[in-house]
Length: 166
Image 1 (tube, helix red, strand yellow):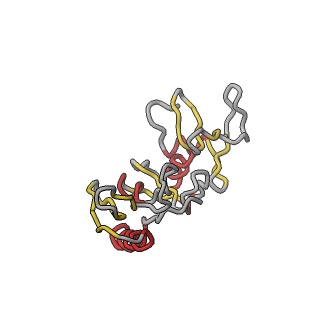
Image 2: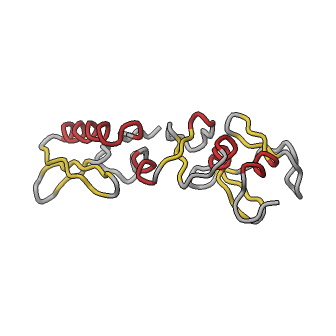
Image 3: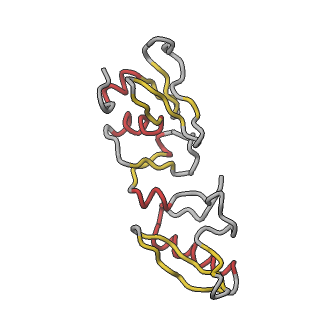
């Protein structure tokens, strides 16, 4: 049934979507009809395998509702296991990055703000369409953070994420 990529009709035949969770409609080997599809991966997404191919649950939920598989599917609220259709949207790679959370290795606590050793000031930057936009140097980290947040709202719009970790 599944060859290279899963189609909307195949997904609808294989799964029932209940609030962003997929449940098998058919039994196959150890997989029984009615069981939830997918397991939590180490990077926080739900994934399952069928037809010798692995799929992310949120991408299949999107496919089932919209009939196509975009290159990137974004979780609007940043919660990787909230796969309700209201929380999923097709995005570009840039838009997907704009909605990312604060990186775990960020030491300032402010997305887009870094200490510039030579200037001995805080530097503020954002990325737009794969290009970094320098927003200035600041004595105060809070001001640098505010400038980045305002620029993110202006340039990233509804995809702006100012670093919320939850």
